[in-house]
Length: 271
Image (cartoon, rainbow, N blue to C red; front, side):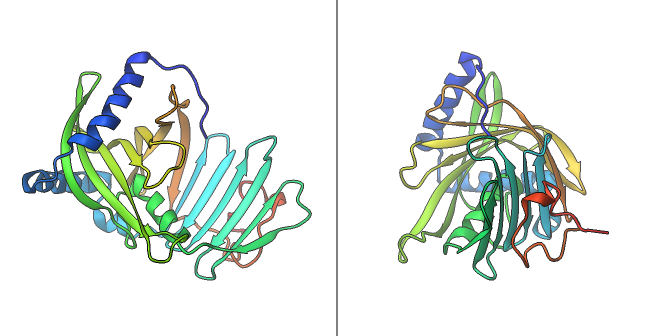
């Protein structure tokens, strides 16, 4: 997903400043939490409203060239197509958490192979949806405070949150990750999401920036996304994504192993 290109020095320094300030300065007192709740409710309303968000049945997403395609059937099924070129090549996966079963096949493999899914995979997958949906029926962030931050002369509302889910490596441990949302103060939509990792993963934080929101069946999704890990010097190129919700898909999609020959539209219902 990340395709590095040079970016202006000022914004690189700005991002580093944001990451440090968010961790240190986000107030967690009663007034700050009350403000966070107000900002959050405005954002939910601007996104499309809680009722619509919580009743999404599935989400289809793909980049403009269809090199990556994903279908998330909430709350427990996923289908992914990826065509990354050498050395990985084409890669197709399905997850069915209700059966604790995953399938995967890569170009050049003689056949599909199946494997049991880890205990926390479902929660991790659902937590990943919070980047764009803010909430789901099955997992919601805990609001811990609010702030205001200025980037390139423009102010943004910040809501600091925590997301907790099981650690499959240790049965008695929970993973808590910090997610800070920067909201545009005019549209009240997410401008950036900064994720801080619970344990060493080779980086301190991961930032996604969103732009050009479009309405998709009553829910707003960003058309362009770029990202950056804290140790990287530059942002990725902006990637154009197409998103749809509540699509009709093959009812046998998760009943058998995926196939490369079905291509990036292998999820589609056959008429």
